[in-house]
Image 1: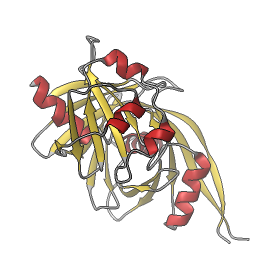
Image 2 (image 1 turned 30 degrees about the vertical axis):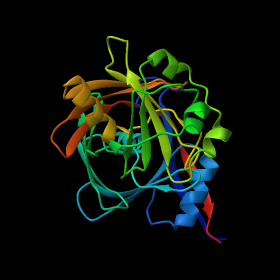
Image 3 (image 1 turned 135 degrees about the horizontal axis):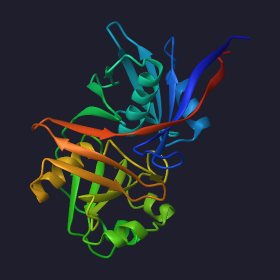
Image 4 (image 1 turned 135 degrees about the vertical axis):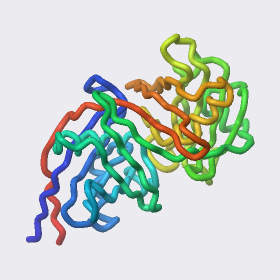
Length: 276
């Protein structure tokens, strides 16, 4: 019997409270796992994403891969934050981490007091259209704008009512049948709260769970999208899902942004994997 214990954490990201934000699994690997095993673990945990970290040559440099219960995800913000929280917890003297994704994207992470700052790429959006069926399945009658981001394969819908955004109750079965070529749909609106600039919710039954509680990856294009509308470089984002979560985003340059947030470790243990 070839049993392999894997050190595993569950972490609530983009929150300062347990049972809020977005829960992620974090698996610390001594040796790489097959994609089949990583997907099986992600299915077993059932979180929107589980990160798998493997040390590379270099000081605090790691390979990082992300899996939803359905597929590998090339980039995930909340699982990156969760992974950073675990590594900073295990290595108290470390203030900088370097992750390399499956697409060879370099992610540089800094610990700044109680915040974790993640350097992410800036992605563009292009004009797109949303079908009547898609809008109906979301419970939306009209939109301000529709855009599409190629790198994440996500459709963005801006609406003019944050109350409607908070109270959306999509028909996920109907939503699933309105599209066959996107990973998810991101709905966003200007916030009416003084502490936040914009709000969002992310639905992705095509490639993950029905709704992702808090989504760092969508801010690769949301940051520039709202920066252009609000004429601001630094903004406060609120994801108004049932669990809720928040982060600070800042457009650093045309191709680089910072996402800052907090996280809480909820659980530590060992996953017993039989490799036979």
